Length: 81
Image (cartoon, rainbow, N blue to C red):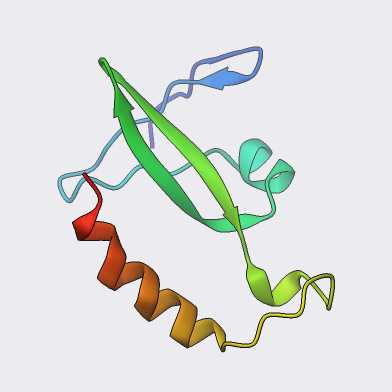
Protein backbone atom coordinates (compact mmCIF):
# COMPACT_ATOMS: atom_id res chain seq x y z
CA UNK A 1 0.00 0.00 0.00
CA UNK A 2 1.34 3.41 -0.93
CA UNK A 3 1.98 6.41 1.27
CA UNK A 4 -1.17 8.25 2.28
CA UNK A 5 -1.26 12.04 2.07
CA UNK A 6 -3.22 13.86 4.80
CA UNK A 7 -4.08 17.50 5.39
CA UNK A 8 -6.26 18.43 8.37
CA UNK A 9 -9.59 16.59 7.99
CA UNK A 10 -8.71 15.46 4.46
CA UNK A 11 -6.84 12.44 3.23
CA UNK A 12 -5.88 11.32 -0.28
CA UNK A 13 -7.16 7.80 -0.97
CA UNK A 14 -7.18 5.54 -4.03
CA UNK A 15 -9.99 3.75 -5.84
CA UNK A 16 -9.43 0.12 -6.85
CA UNK A 17 -10.47 -1.53 -10.13
CA UNK A 18 -13.91 -2.33 -8.70
CA UNK A 19 -14.58 1.29 -7.68
CA UNK A 20 -13.97 0.73 -3.97
CA UNK A 21 -12.42 3.39 -1.78
CA UNK A 22 -11.20 2.65 1.74
CA UNK A 23 -11.66 5.42 4.27
CA UNK A 24 -8.71 5.90 6.63
CA UNK A 25 -9.10 4.38 10.11
CA UNK A 26 -8.98 7.85 11.70
CA UNK A 27 -12.11 8.85 9.74
CA UNK A 28 -13.93 5.56 10.29
CA UNK A 29 -13.40 5.76 14.05
CA UNK A 30 -15.12 9.16 14.20
CA UNK A 31 -18.20 8.12 12.21
CA UNK A 32 -20.66 5.60 13.64
CA UNK A 33 -21.93 4.30 10.28
CA UNK A 34 -21.31 1.50 7.82
CA UNK A 35 -23.60 2.83 5.07
CA UNK A 36 -23.49 6.17 3.32
CA UNK A 37 -25.50 8.21 0.87
CA UNK A 38 -23.18 9.09 -2.00
CA UNK A 39 -23.99 11.85 -4.44
CA UNK A 40 -22.13 13.84 -7.02
CA UNK A 41 -22.02 17.62 -6.71
CA UNK A 42 -20.17 19.04 -9.69
CA UNK A 43 -16.92 17.07 -9.71
CA UNK A 44 -17.05 16.35 -5.96
CA UNK A 45 -18.33 13.11 -4.43
CA UNK A 46 -20.15 13.71 -1.14
CA UNK A 47 -20.63 10.93 1.45
CA UNK A 48 -23.28 11.31 4.14
CA UNK A 49 -23.22 8.68 6.90
CA UNK A 50 -26.46 6.77 7.53
CA UNK A 51 -26.67 5.75 11.20
CA UNK A 52 -27.61 2.12 11.89
CA UNK A 53 -31.29 2.21 12.96
CA UNK A 54 -30.79 -0.84 15.18
CA UNK A 55 -28.48 1.26 17.37
CA UNK A 56 -31.15 3.91 18.05
CA UNK A 57 -31.96 1.88 21.21
CA UNK A 58 -35.64 2.78 21.53
CA UNK A 59 -35.35 6.51 20.88
CA UNK A 60 -37.98 6.12 18.15
CA UNK A 61 -40.72 3.51 17.98
CA UNK A 62 -40.79 2.27 14.37
CA UNK A 63 -43.60 -0.21 13.57
CA UNK A 64 -41.59 -1.91 10.77
CA UNK A 65 -38.57 -4.19 10.79
CA UNK A 66 -35.23 -2.98 9.50
CA UNK A 67 -35.57 -5.37 6.56
CA UNK A 68 -38.98 -3.87 5.64
CA UNK A 69 -37.54 -0.35 5.76
CA UNK A 70 -34.55 -1.32 3.61
CA UNK A 71 -36.81 -3.00 1.02
CA UNK A 72 -39.09 0.04 0.88
CA UNK A 73 -36.06 2.31 0.42
CA UNK A 74 -34.70 0.16 -2.40
CA UNK A 75 -38.10 0.23 -4.16
CA UNK A 76 -38.41 4.03 -3.86
CA UNK A 77 -34.82 5.02 -4.66
CA UNK A 78 -35.03 4.54 -8.47
CA UNK A 79 -38.33 6.48 -8.60
CA UNK A 80 -36.77 9.68 -7.26
CA UNK A 81 -35.76 12.11 -9.89
